[in-house]
Each structure stands twice: as C-alpha cells, then as structure tokens.
Amino acid sequence: MKSRNNEQQMSFRTRAANFFTAVNKKYFIIYAVITLTVVLSFLSDSFLSVHNIINILRQSSMIAIIAVGVFFTIVSAGIDISVGSTVALAGIIMAKVLVDYSAPVFVGVLAGLAVGVAIGFINGYLVTKRRIPAFVATLGMMGAVRGLTYVITNAYPVSGLPKGIYFIGRGYVGPIPVPVIIMVVVYAGAYVIAEHTRIGRFIFAIGGNEEASHLSGIKVDRYKLFAYMTSGGLAALSGIILVSRLASGQPNAGIGYEFEAITAAVVGGTSLYGGKGTIPGVFLGAIFIAILLNGMVLLNISSYYQQMLKGIVLILAVMIDVARNADH
Image 1 (cartoon, rainbow, N blue to C red):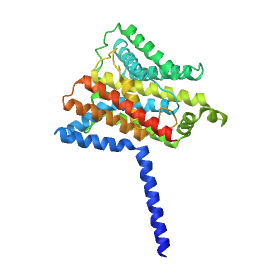
Image 2: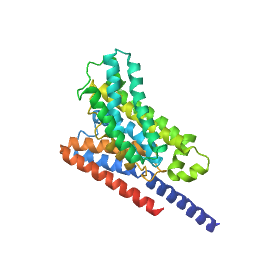
Image 3: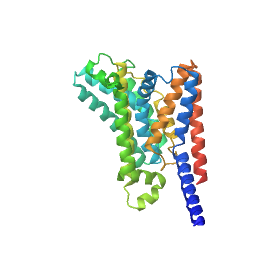
Image 4: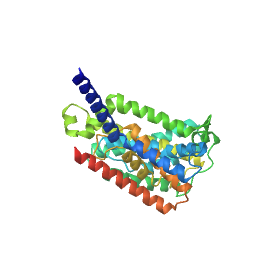
C-alpha cells in the first residue's frame, strides 16, 4: 500500500514537472513580462498607474494587431516585411477616399482594408506561384508600396478628414480605448482560427513540413495565400487606426512597424523556422515590447538607446529560438 502511494506521488510529481516544463517552453514570455513589470514599478512611481496601463495597451494595439498577421506568415515558414508600407498606403487610400470623394466612413474603411488584402494577395502570389523567397518578395513589395504611397501623395499628408473617423483611433467605450477593443477582437478571432479550425491546423502543418503537407492532400498554396492576405489586411487595419489617431494620412507612417511586429511575434515564442507559435504568446510579446518602450520613456532614456535595445531583444529572442530548435 505504501509502495503504491509512493508511486502515485512520484507520478503526480512527474506530471507536474512535465506541465511546468511545457509552460516554461511555451510561455516563457510570461515571466519576462512579469519581471519587467516588477522592475519598472520600482524604478518609476507612475508606471503602474491606471492611466499609464491604459496608455500602454492603446500604444501597443497597432503593433499587436500587425503581429497577428505576421504570426500567420511566420508559422507557415514565410515572413512579411511589407507590413509597415502597407500601413501607410492603406491609410492614405482611406484618407483620400474620405477627403477627395466625400465618401461615408465605412466606405473609406473598406477601401483601406481592400488595399491591405490586395497587397497580401500579391505577396502570397509571388511566394506561392512564382516561388520567390518570402523575404525577397515582401522586401521588394515594401519598397514598391512605400514608393507608390509617396507618388500618390507627392510626400504630403492628406488632411481634412471627417470627424466621424476619429472614433476608431481616439474613441472610448467606457474607460476602454476603441483600439484596445479592436485588438482584443482580432486576437480572439485569431486564437479561434489558429487553435480550433482546419485553417490553423493546416498552416501549422505547412510550416512544420511543407512537402509532407502537400503529400497529405493539403492545398499548400491556398493556405499560404490566406496567411499573407491576413497579414496585409491586419496591417491595413492598423493603418486605419493610425490615420484616425493622427487625424491625417501620413505617407511616412508605419516606418519600422515591420521590425516591431516581427520582434513581438518572435519574442512571444513564434519560431522563425515555421510550424510553432501561439496567439497568446504573440500578444504577450507585443505587450512586452510596449512595456519596455513605455518604461524607457518614463525613465527618460534616449531614443537611440531604445532603438539599440529593441535590436538586442530581437537578437536574443532569435538565439533562444535557434537553441530550442537545436534541441529537437
């Protein structure tokens, strides 16, 4: 009897150890967020104020939304570095539709989203049908889309937007900013797709082994195309939020957003090798980056150091990813 109790205790301990090991590997970012929060709460009295927490969530919302789209492309063993330029062009198109044609707000929003989805479609076509490496295809698209944005605007901002658009980026529902609500809805939808639908399962399978997925009957090109169109559409959504916040369409908007979105996804545990990652991890990665930047602002740290630290964080995250894949 005593021996059986000992075996049960050992079995429980083993299961508990396995559980915490899985949590550590999958959601290591949780500990990073908690540690950074504790450190900054000691260094700055205003860090944990309600106003600052809401500010962090609002500021992180656009990058966090873009990171969801980037997540799907990376999980499919690709990447999308054209999202920053997509933010700018989608915002400019929406602004011009509203200003030049006096269109209703919903028409302008749909036009902006359509631009993002179209850019994603072109990226997906180049990657799947023309077999251009994702990095090269989206790098070329990044330059082409940014150039087109400058051509359309002659490098001047588009102003004079109707006040009806302001609610998207500046509005509140109770104490909660509208961009935060949009972010939560995006993450809820992405979580369902990634974890509970055939689309999510197939994208993970493609990223894990594209050849085996093809032999299993999965329409690889179709699901890769979905990933890139999702990335473009969510980048456009962030562009719409940004235009609403700034009350104008800025041709230089979104510069550097691709770096922060990819960093958020990778820091959150999305493997650059494809086939691995979680939506909650991406969210925590985006929050980590937002807390880090917010903390440096509160501590009056130079923007040059901020840029340097973001680069170091990305390198460390990739090093961890490489080490994890080496273990397997």
